[in-house]
Image (spheres, rainbow, N blue to C red):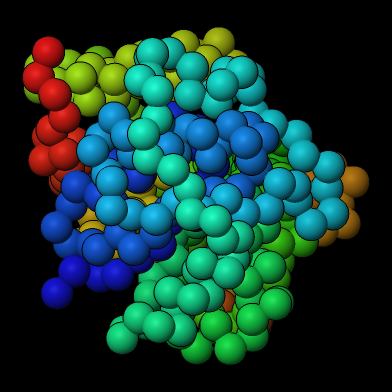
Length: 314
Ligand code: BDR
Ligand code: CA
């Protein structure tokens, strides 16, 4: 039986491919897509989710907009990585799928309490919506099978030397999630940096001969250029689909038990995830930390999902 999931995202180049992986892979049942401010403003991330769904032919999955700013921090978008639209690179057709008239947090809660099975949440963005859900609807926690998130790192950061973007953007929200008692799996930079979109990967999307495949190749080409410029990466890491892949098949992403706390006060380290992999500190296990990616399996699933969604040949 496919695992029921909700993606909470801020598209974002890698979020766009995470949506496609979740919609195209038969091992998961994508129940909803919710958006939050992060890589760009809420208006732009929501428009981008609609653009991606329109192009990929994802018409039957509700999209709802959520929080337009972090709980405490001011919003600082990642336009240096994702451009002014949040999805710079390709041209998108006018979106034909719309949002539902419901706040993301209310939609997630409604699905959690009405779905026959517990649902897995896959946040690939700042954790503002998820923290608000857990705070506003404490009954929701028991209905969440697990939270498999892209964020944090067992090592260094990207937004600051210490902190990864999704956690650094809203550290208080991440702190609420890691302390919630809900099973959490953290797919941090240490594992997503193993999902490198090489020229061979880009060629696999181009070779599909569909609008969707070509758009993926264009997204990855733009994303490669900013990663090269900002951090000197030869090939860019495709972070967000790694969290989806962990739900699709746990054998693609190997994890270990860990204690994860979020640094809220450090002058230079606010938003860092402090990950105790060896339990030196005698703090309880509150997360699974992803460590190793089976990159070939990952890319095979990613490419197959986009091919399944197909889109128009052209
Ligand atoms: C995360 O930050 C965003 O820019 C990406 O979409 C990803 O979710 C990586 O740090
Ligand atoms: Ca993201």
